[in-house]
Amino acid sequence: EVQLLESGGGLTQPGGSLRLSCAASGFTFSSYAMTWVRQAPGKGLEWVSDISGSSGRTNYADSVKGRFTVSRDNSKNTLHLQMSSLRADDTAVYYCAKTVYGGSYHIDYWGQGTLVTVSS
Amino acid sequence: SYVLTQPPSVSVAPGKTAKISCGGNNIGRKSVHWYQQKPGQAPVLAMYYDGDRPSGIPDRFSGSNSGNTATLTISRVEAGDEADYYCQVWDSSSDPPYVFGSGTKVTVL
Image (cartoon, rainbow over all chains, first blue to last red; front, side, top):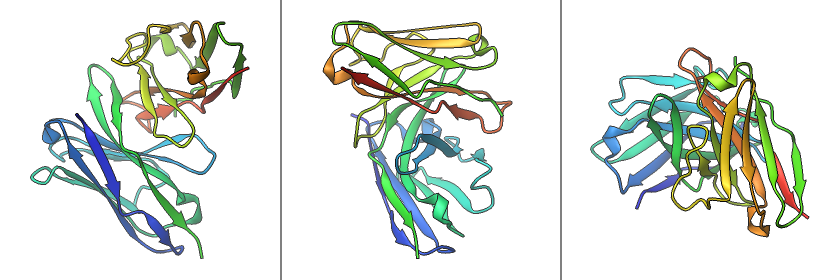
């Protein structure tokens, strides 16, 4: 059974930093690209970042480029999102997700999410 | 960047059919994926590659994609289908490569 368990969310002040982690199990972690998707309170889904299975390729949304860094440790089946220079509009539930490619990428499994609140 | 347009809400009586549209420029040339999100829960894959159903999704759910509109259809709607539904496409030449629609709230009357 695929499981994705996020951690690291919480309350931080504007300009602060947080590091999210996602512990994966139930599949061969290194074989799959992974992605982060966030959802602001009462809003829709917004793609944040993704990383290839080998970590050779990363992509970021313009809204987080230069402030967020995605990484993974395939030896520990763990995905990370280092967030810095946080702003109020980064407040959201952050979901870790497993992606599948077959001509197009889509998400086949989602974690339960971790809430990040940026407020003074 | 590529834009996906969904109606904010769709209301349907139990037992009837709900159609959720997802509009985009020549979306018929792309693969469309759909996610269902119930209140307080993480999204769940509801349909992929236009019309393929993941295991666990009832066969009352179907999908189509042509021209400028993709559609998720829910037949014989049940109270448990009440949720937000999001369409999504991926395009390596687009920035961002993953694009989600704004979501449609399906209300069962």
